[in-house]
Amino acid sequence: MSHSEFDVIETYFAHLSDWAGDHVRIGVGDDCAQLKVGEGFELVISTDTFVQGVHFPEGAEAELVADRTLNAAASDLAAMGAEPWAVVGALVLPSVDATWLRVFSDQLRSELQSLNLPLVGGNLTKGPMLSITWTVMGRVKAGQSMTRGGAIVGDDLYVSGWLGRAALGLQLYLDQEVSLDTESSSAVETAKQAYRSPKARLMLGQQLNGIATAGIDVSDGLLADLMHLLSMSGVGATIELDLIAADSVRRDRAASELDRQVAERTQADTEFLARELASVRLALADVATGEEIRELIKVVHRLEARLDHLNGVAGDE
Image 1 (tube, rainbow, N blue to C red):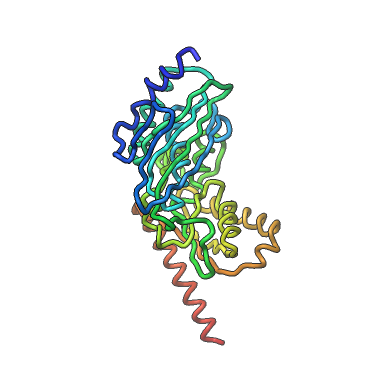
Image 2: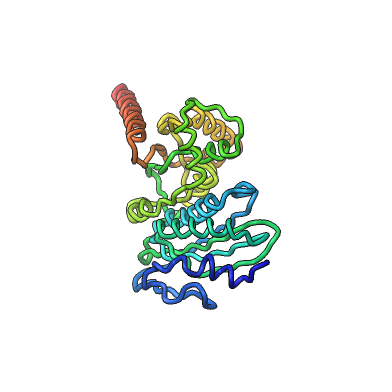
């Protein structure tokens, strides 16, 4: 690298977490970081690696790389119901681009503070392509984390956010041809923003800890990650497609894609799905805007209609 490793670290990364609390005993600059966790708490740790051309597009702007990779890694903490505690990163650079690094560093500082996740160490090296690895750490009260293995028969299933919006945003970001039910420029920008700058739902995870029986970060798609949760919990599930709140950005596009995935998964996993032990209603648990409230009201109406139908069937028996 044209600049020494230590020069780059000192210039762009050493001071990103000057705001960290006193639980960071030793941060960037020593051989190891040293953290206080607190009596009665346990540490939860997760590592994710993001590679250019695989996890973010080649030539992606520095802000996107900082936002998307850090929030995707931190989302694992949300899934466990953990309080964010610290993060370390390993950055591989093909060359030193001072302009790119400055923008990346500035955006990273903003996201670290937003997530309350101090950067306490890491590594920098030269390699053939850009990649970054984040190891995120959080804390939970001893024995009180959410896991994938806690779901029980009779549980309902909730998803925060809008299914498929970020995937659509990636297609739009890459200027791929897509079919939208709306030509609204704001809807297009909303989808792009969902991809460029996802937000780890750390506060929601902490609020659900002790209420939800299980949790998982949906990063590989609803069907794939739901199967991981069901396998770990030893239960089955039924997805009621008509109870999924329609995203105004995607509308029927999301439902038809999920229909296809369900059909493929059902064919491939007939024996597993035959052991269904629970009927899981899928609804939306994220209400932040008027648009989302209106869509949620539609879900409630569909639920009421379904309950009326079920009650009528029971009354005829």
